[in-house]
Amino acid sequence: MRTARVLAAAALVAFAGCSGGDDGGGTGPTPVFTSLTLAPTSPTVTKGGSTTLTATAKDQSGNAMSGLQVTYVSANNQVATVTNAGVVTGVAVGSTDITATGVIGSVTKTANVTVSVSALSATATVNATTAFGFNPTSVTVAANGTVTWNFGSTTHNVTFDAATPTGGNIGGTTNSSASRTFPTPGTYPYQCTIHGGMTGEVKVQ
Image (cartoon, rainbow, N blue to C red; front, side, top):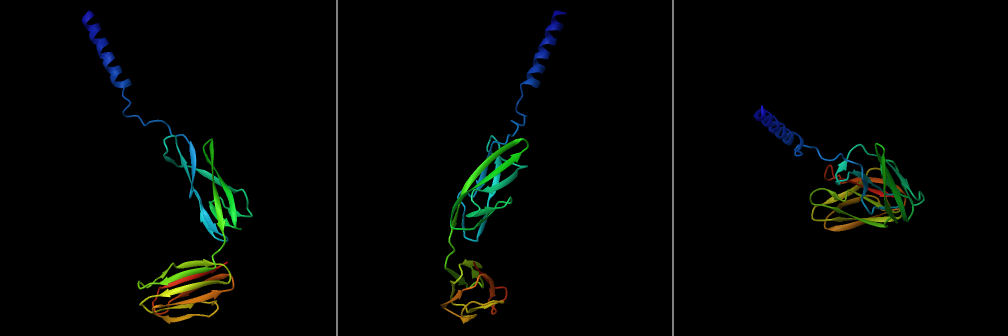
């Protein structure tokens, strides 16, 4: 009997050791919403321009979490506004704080960045490339600003779809530059009619 009791006790100890001491198959600690981050960390926009903030929730291990609900507030809407989609639009030259409030379950965290709004440039440059493209395809200038197109060894033209700047369209040009002034705010789509699909636009604010 004594031998049987000893064997039974040994088996019980062995079972307890196998079942209670193995943490290798666990899932780790439950993720807890610990911090909220915003990107970019130092956003800049031009007056009338926009950029989009991205909020990320992180747990205690620094891993991204899902299920985040976020709202945004600008400290000064006279400098920059922000939507709840994180779209920041510059209103006037200056800087202001944007605060994001994020919620997951019953946990709330905040984060903020300072957005800087700069004046629109009075000039822009576009390169008409040998690869049959305008680079960049879109530029923005202030009213009465000037855009200069640089042409290389391939002949291109600049033909505006509707409204035209001072000086009108630019005819076929090779190894040279041509500039146009835009006194009136609006969007000016254009194309090279020599090469199909070669398009661009000038935004005037």
